[in-house]
Length: 96
Image (cartoon, rainbow, N blue to C red; front, side, top):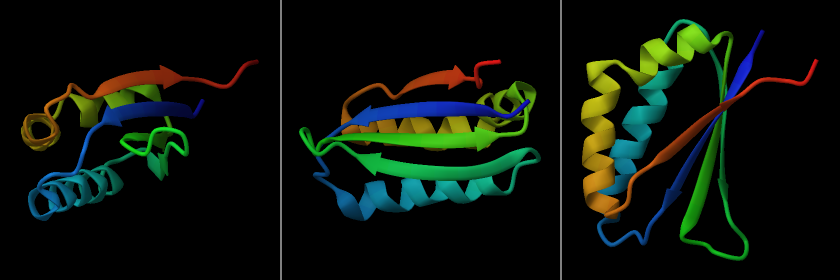
């Protein structure tokens, strides 16, 4: 059963020349993973500094393999360092 991963970040883009390429690397890296289906990135209308990524994966195990990979963790640590905030993740599945 497909799962949706909600990734929330809150930040001011003070160094877009560093941050944007890292976010692209995360996206490209995810797309290359087995079980990856799609991603949608959204920005809050009320709080533009808040972004949410909804990533769809075939299984929770597919997501977990990417989530725990050294490649993703290394890039994510750089992102969190630049934005000064921790990124939050939550996995959802469709109601049955």
